[in-house]
Image 1 (tube, rainbow, N blue to C red):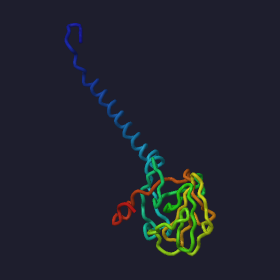
Image 2 (image 1 turned 60 degrees about the vertical axis):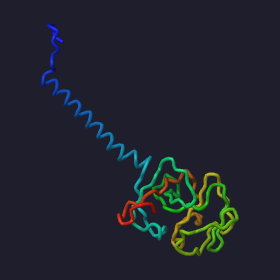
Image 3 (image 1 turned 90 degrees about the vertical axis):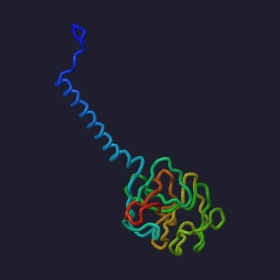
Image 4 (image 1 turned 180 degrees about the vertical axis):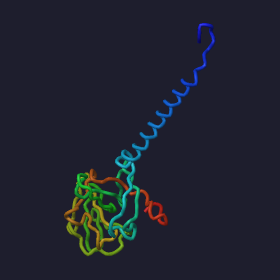
Length: 189
């Protein structure tokens, strides 16, 4: 209000100044959202992963793209997971299926998988196992360890191999929730 009690209308210059400031703020918010999606979301929420190799055939094939859920995930038997076999310090990751859970005893006899001395159903195996590896004898998993296998047992490097062994929970990056490429196979694996 001015001295006469009349409310003054802001001039065009002041309106233009407010308009420029609001555009700058809006632009900054968009940039922050884009940076969040580029850097934070893949690190902490969802990550795109590409299958490399034949170890998960016939379920997953070389070159397929997957989305991995990295938050609030509690591993379950038969889940397909992404993990770092040599620890998170290394860039190499594997995609395998969980068979053995923490505290369980696993043993592989021929083509049969035993959990706590009971044979389990193995509907995901593409072929027979030639090698039981470190699970030839009963193997007791620690309270934070999982036993993983590739579906294509003939070529899979998995928990049977002493170089991989049981996978610690801290090295599991997440759970495969969606196949996004090729589009003809879009959906849950």
